[in-house]
Image 1 (cartoon, rainbow, N blue to C red):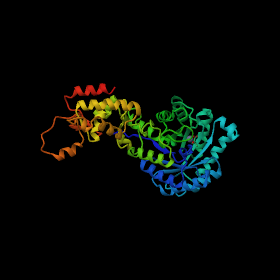
Image 2 (image 1 turned 45 degrees about the vertical axis):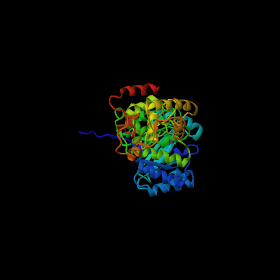
Image 3 (image 1 turned 60 degrees about the vertical axis):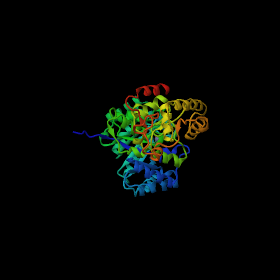
Image 4 (image 1 turned 120 degrees about the vertical axis):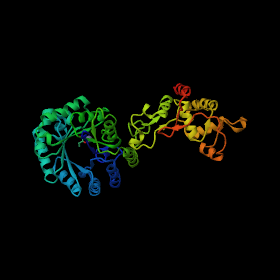
Amino acid sequence: MATEQVRITVFDTTLRDGEQSPGCSMNHQEKLRLAHQLDRLGVDVIEAGFPIASDGDFEAVKAVADVIRRPIIAGLARACQPDIERAWDALKDAARPRIHVFLATSDIHLQYKLRITRDQCLAQAREAVSFAKSFCSDVEFSPEDATRTDPDFLCRVLEAVVEAGATTLNIPDTVGYTVPSEFGELIATIRRRVKGIEDVTISAHCHNDLGMAVANTMAAIAAGARQVECTINGIGERAGNASLEEIVMAIRVRHDRYPYETGIVGEQIFPASQMLSEITGVPVQPNKAVTGRNAFAHEAGIHQDGVLKNPLTYEIMTPQSVGVPDSKLVLGKHSGRHALAIRCEQLGYQFDRRALDDIYRRFVRLADKIKHVEDHHLLELIRDTHKPAASATPLFEPLPNAVAAAANPLAPESPRPFPLAPQTNAFGAPLPVPGDQHHDQEDYLWGV
Ligand code: KIV
Ligand code: ZN
């Protein structure tokens, strides 16, 4: 009998916290375009913006709320009447609106930023949530800087807002200060001590100042959080927010450790990442997990050889599962003959062993100088190495296999070129034939 999986709500805040990242602000049309992609991606909640922040943001939240009908659409509001009214104005025509109210609770924020006492804070949080509740049944409350708030006081505030009608309690690590064990304990404490907690959803909202936003989010899930707040490509204030794609793929790839499910359509992850990058003009860090351009690229010869034989050797998820068209073999000085031969084949050239040796030596010298050998470099190198006039018997076949075969289908089978190509793997690359262990071993060593 199949056991029912615990569902994690994915709350995407790319259009709100994400756009607070320098250089990432988006206009109305851009937000709407990305919101459609977030809908295709299958997020459960889209936080579309902070309506009181500007007329432009109000219009953007309103447009998203009016047009995108499946997910919940949230708008952010400080814990005061004008913010909450403005948020509701923007959200009121949404199919599933949510008002997200926040108020800082740490002593540092109360004393220096808000200049209010703890008692005033408690009263303000309660009143703001009841006011929001008078418009909308779905109200989320966030005690800003929760991870630097006295836990006793935090629990008192949370209890007060649950009584006032909050349906989601979001626990922000606003300054990216916490660590996984501590954050997990905080969520467990809240679950144990806050009256009425069983009827509300606990959410985690982690920033990445110490590079632990995703790890902290995973710890929160393990401790009982059932909503995660995250952004595409991990964009957000300062060092960013927890990255949606990393959380989702951690749950998927390590399902043995995280037996949960999300509604995310994996194949839409890369398109969402690309669209965001195109809209904001902010490129994705090349080695970014899951969506960076190197996330599925292999340069080391040993790795390339392994991946060509079976992708499982060096890939824990397939590129296709996150919508990346293919894994890339990057030709550089660490590459081996196996990958070089396959790239030559893809360019229409098959070489016997000796010719490949020749090309390979020159290729390594070139790669030492220029780092990445692109196809046009390789073509030039092939032409240089094997100028027709320099050799009476050409060592390479300059026609693509299929073209050559079509030209003379009855010709006797020629001696098998290297590499042998009887089968292809998931990348369309040839697999070695049985009995070719000698070559396999050589490829492996050459790849070092
Ligand atoms: O980081 C934070 O505290 C926030 C709140 C507004 C939820 O973004
Ligand atoms: Zn935040």
